[in-house]
Amino acid sequence: MADPLYELLAPYFDNAESPPAPRDLQTSGYLTRLSTLSFADLTSTEPASLLQSAQSHLRNLQALSKRSHKAVISSSQHLSNLSALLPSLGSQAQALSQDVPALETAATKFAEKYDRSTENAVLDRRKRAALLSRNVDRISDVLDLPSLLSSTVAAAQNAGAGGSGAASSTTSYASALDLHAHIKRLKALYPQSDLIASIQTQSEDEMQNLATILITSLHSPSLKLAAAMRTIGLLRRVAPELGEDDFFISTPAALSTKSLNLSPNATNNDGALGSLLLICRLHTMHATLDALEPLRELADQETIQRQAPNGKANKQQTSNSTSLGTQSERYLKRYIEIFREQSFAILSMYKSIFPGNLPEPDPSTAEESHKPQQIHDPLLPLPSPVSSFTLHLVDMLEKTLREYLPNVGDESARESLLTQVLYCGSSLGRLGAEFGMVVALLEEDMAEEVDLAEDEEKEPEWVAVMKKHRVQASRLEVLARGVGTNRKTSMDVQSPSSALPA
Picture 1: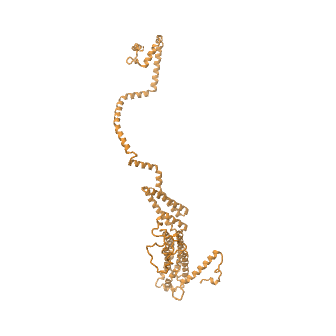
Picture 2 (picture 1 turned 180 degrees about the horizontal axis):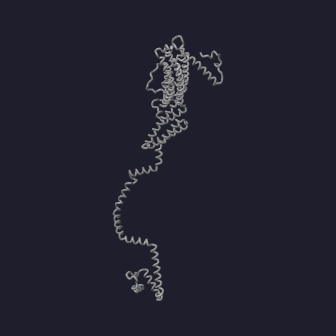
Picture 3 (picture 1 turned 135 degrees about the vertical axis):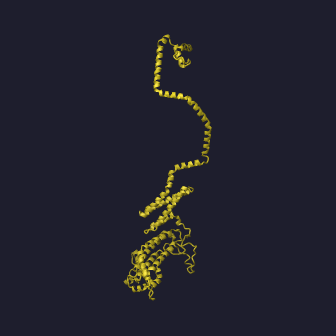
């Protein structure tokens, strides 16, 4: 039905060149609707309905063109270029299809090259870089260890030099030792690391600096026993090689700390620390004695005057003068005072710090006392350093007395000086280093220089001095015993004549 109607209306189409298709859904629907209308509707209402629909579509088109004219224009332009883009797209698609095999081959080679299951230098380098990035904070802390150790050592040195207190310096020393121990642990954990090796080298340099600071502190004139013990303990940790004892063979014999027996069989089990302490304190003792240089120069002038060709005659002429040998007496008096104080402090400090390093008696001495003395084998263990040190101190004092005591012409002044020497010997005798008999060895020189041996029947001067010293020492001992027990003894009650010196 629709086809005849379509053929009937075809001559009346407005656009005859492109009429609507008869099979079109809208065309067939409209033709079906026309077939249902009456003739009156076709002549009256249908033209008005078509005009209204045309105007409605026109307004919709106008609104659409106003609202979407830019998109329409752009679509039109793209549509005009589509004829040129399609050939280009085809050629590019063809080139891509040709390059895909090469890309697949390169991807396969890349996957094989950077496969985690195989060794690869690039991957290892990237892994190390990633590991370094994750542990940058830890590495920064490790790199800061040498500077931290250096600042700790500097703080310890400043605390010791400024006298701010032993607690702060001890804390700084302990912190420095802890840091050094931590660096040594890192070296043990990572022996192949060049970084850790470099840090350990810097740490060893700082510990050498710390050891130098500690050794320098042993030269302090005001060094006390507690500070010395603390310094030696730190040196045992800072410089353990000083405490190593490869030379000496220590024996587990019971040592007595009541006396220092200068036996050649004594052993050393503290390495070089004992010798180091003695050398440092001896240096301080020499520095203190060097402060007497003005007095010594005056005493040297008297020595030159005495040794002049006419010095003995002048000395006999001025034997009654109180000014003869006054400068030598002043120098010797101050020298013996400093020597007594410093030597006793050094030996008592050594005895307290190294109680296991004291000389021990030879058990075979009592049994072989009747046998002739044998030559000491140089391959045997060396004696304790305090033995040679004590002998060196005595030699120092004896040399000074031999040089300047002959200048003193006043007998009472010489007796006072010799008594002072005996007290010094008694003081060191409490430490096992009695050298009071050295005054007897000076008798020969004094006889030659001061003419004390003119009367052969006269008692030697050193004998009288020792007798007086023994009497005074016994009285002091009795007095000290009486004060300690708070009671009198039979020696306290005596006649006034018995209290006079012999």
